[in-house]
Image (tube, rainbow, N blue to C red):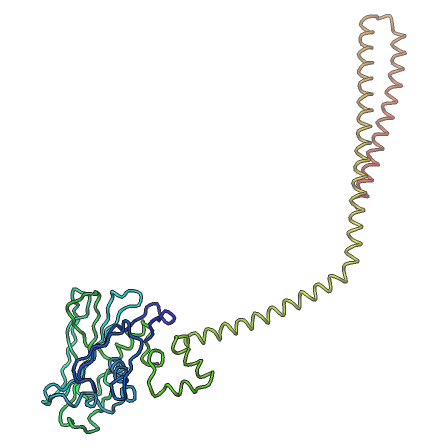
Length: 377
């Protein structure tokens, strides 16, 4: 089992210990701790592979996974008839929180008495420790209704105990406490166990992701690069990402194709821009000349208007002054009619000049408007 399953799922399980009793060569109860263990060594026949088979047995592996063709063969044949049963308990804890415990228990018992029908009991209560409490599910090996039976047709092959029905009891326990004193289990089907373990990244349908059998070692070593890559992908759980990777590669190809089209358009636009560069230069020069002419014309007209306004102002002041003088002279001396006539004549002259000036102003205004129209045109 992988110690770090975060590549596969948000939570991972770590084996803490395994308890084996009556399973194959383990006649007596044996506890193997996994906290500091790195390897199990020993001579041939000492039970090294049996520990891995016990793990596979708990998870409901069939056939070659536990190297038996019927359930009664996994029970140690040296046990007394009334104690013919094999029990395996696998204790685990969460990788992220070792205080959260999880225990799996499976046992096979050979009965001395025949039963007419199997007994099923499914409790739905929970204990105070958060564990799923008591109950058992007993199935005859000849009953094919069980989803968690390594070999439903186990009675098809005879053994020393083939005269007795073989019962399989499958239980699971969840303990939400490091120091839980009670251990109560709930019977489940293999399909339920399979779905339950999936959230930890343990896929019983693809066992190569978390367990490697002895008979596959040589095949793995001698496999080609592609096969080895697929095997490693199965172990780390990245097989599910293949479709996503293929989709992203297709998206990259589409984006590269679109990028190529955009680059081609940019190249064509750049080439067309280079051909239009002389015309653009001529247009820019024309706009610059036009702007300069407008500025010069505006300055000229502005100066002319200022001049004419000043002249008109001066004339108005002179007229106003002369008029006031004339009025004063009329009031002061009524006898000065001749002088008044002369003054009138002078005024007429001045008025004539003023009119001429107005005409000139009008002419200049007309000239200014014509220049403006030319500029605007």
